[in-house]
Amino acid sequence: MKFTTALATTALAAGTASACPGSSSWIHAKCEMKVTFSNSCGDVVAEMQARAAGENGWADPHNGGTYTLSSTSSNDLEGQRTTGDGKYTDKFDFNFESTGDSSCEVVACSESQVNSVIDYSTNYCNLHSLYCNSSDGCPTAGTDLTYSESYSSCSQHDDVCVAADQVASMLRGAVSSI
Ligand SMILES: *[C@@H]1O[C@H](CO)[C@@H](O)[C@H](O)[C@H]1NC(C)=O
Image (cartoon, rainbow, N blue to C red; front, side):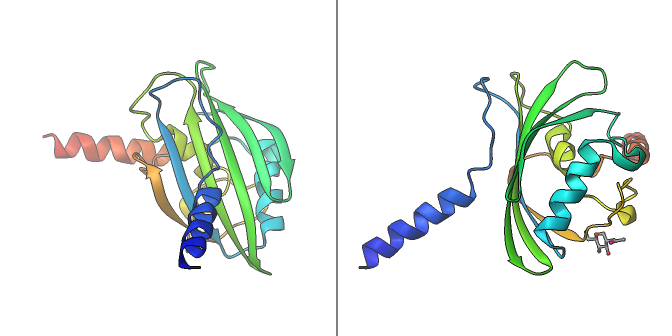
C-alpha cells in the first residue's frame, strides 16, 4: 500500500514537471519554474495570448522579440519566441492548473534550440514577459496579473527583461567593477 502511494506521488511530481518543450541540442540553456497567480487561469491565459498577439500595442520589452503561439487551450499554451535580431528561436510551454476562482498554478519552461549554456536570462524573460505587471515596469495588454515565481531549473533569472532594468544592471556592473 505504501509502495503504491509512493509510486503515485512520484508519477504526479513527474507529471507537473513535464512542461519543457524539448530541444534537439544536447547542451542548451533552459528555464523551468512554477508561477502561482492570484488570478483565474482564464484571465492568465487570455492576457498571455493577447500579449503574444501584440494586442493593444503590446511589444516585447526584452529587446523586441517576436512571439508565435503554436497551440493554445485552457490548460496549455505552447509557442516560440524569436530574438529581436532574428538569430535565435527558443521554444516554451506553459501548463495551467486552476486551484480556485482566483488562483492558478502554472508550470512554465523555455528552452534554447541551439547549443548554449549561458543565456543571459533570455529563457527566463521569454516566459516572464508574458505575465509580468506594471509594477515590474512591464507593458500589459490590459490586465495586471499578480504572481510569485519559484525556480526549479532556471539557472539564470535576473530581472533584466525590461530595457530600463538592463541599463540599471549594466550600470551596477560598471560601478561595482571600479
Ligand atoms: C505585480 O505583481 C506583484 C507580485 O509579483 C504584486 O506584488 C503587485 O501587486 C502586482 N502589481 C499589480 C499592479 O497588480
